[in-house]
Length: 359
Image (cartoon, rainbow, N blue to C red; front, side, top):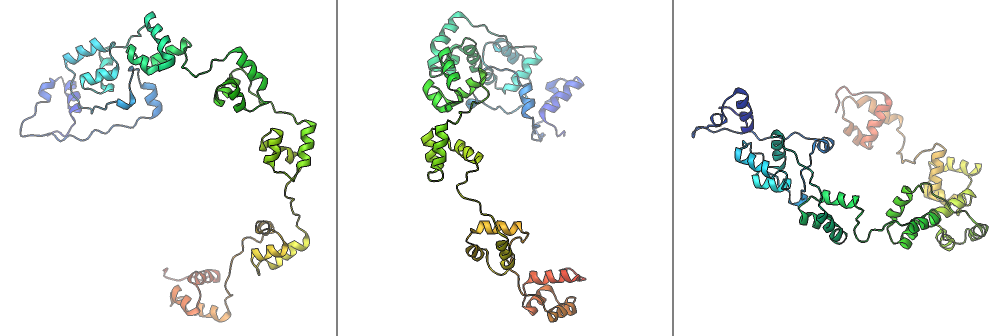
């Protein structure tokens, strides 16, 4: 028997001109083993481009009807023609017991298309009355329209939700006056909106460049006199500026809270001499510097990180390795010489010898 899906058999029967009822006739003793339908992955871009408008769909209540491969009957086609422009796509798909995309594809085959329903004066009045307080979903349910339709219609009519600011000439003038001189959060608090709305409005009206506040002579004098006694946070709070602005101010004048130590020739000589003998901590205490600065100096001098190395191999140990490296394993050599396994492997590599059989 054919191991084909029901949809594949239906399509092939149409190509051969065989009636669908005869193609789908199955004997009671015989069964068709259907292979599971594997849906091809579709990219997000392709899905956005080819997805038609199907009216209002609530993503939380969306149903997913499994593709059953049922043939559309004349009664279903009649229902689809009658209600395609009257009911939302999800509701009509539930009525027919089909998936939304299956219903849309069938509508295309029948040459059906959704018609744009004009807004009546009564609907517009209802929109103006209830949209600001109850939102788009309430109006959409009441008028049997999609959320998108209500949202865009309210935008075209300039109907906004409560709590959203309407930019007036006075608010724009206040924004132009203080933009770049005060923080966006302070301007937003004065106007009664959010910081994000302030930034968007400033961009829309052409206030793209930020105007930096100039340093007054009194501020410069106070900042220089307070350094380095007070912290950046205290000085910035006193001047009404940010810590980043104050840090930039001090950086331009080469003011550092902690002076950079300049290494002398004697100190560098001491580091080179003692680097392999004492620890970084002891070396830092002798030089009266931090461990980080001493470690950074060793890297600059090309000394690299300090590593602990064992005693050097004697001539006797080397001769033992050369005589027995083909007979004994690396681990046996390490036990014989009382050395770590990695050390034995390293010295054999340095001697330039190789074992015939790799371990």
